[in-house]
Image (cartoon, rainbow, N blue to C red; front, side, top):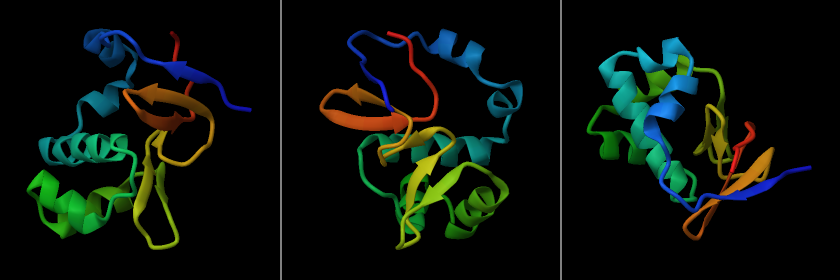
Length: 112
């Protein structure tokens, strides 16, 4: 069963960072760039191709492949496009939350 939360106010970035595991905050700059870009693209609500991610992050597809292959928690559709990454997915699993008009899903509960 999933729960639904609509985010109606600004998110406290420092509070979010305080809840992240230490190893996530201290990943190398290239991986940070790819990770942030991937989260932003997934937040638009569509599957992300490796080529699209590489282009938007201004990195090579090899860099994208290396990072994705080194990470757990990456979800793909039948076309091998990315549909989820480290707790954020466009597929209806876990808990639903809404940002603007976009429905997204997470395996983590989000407090209102």
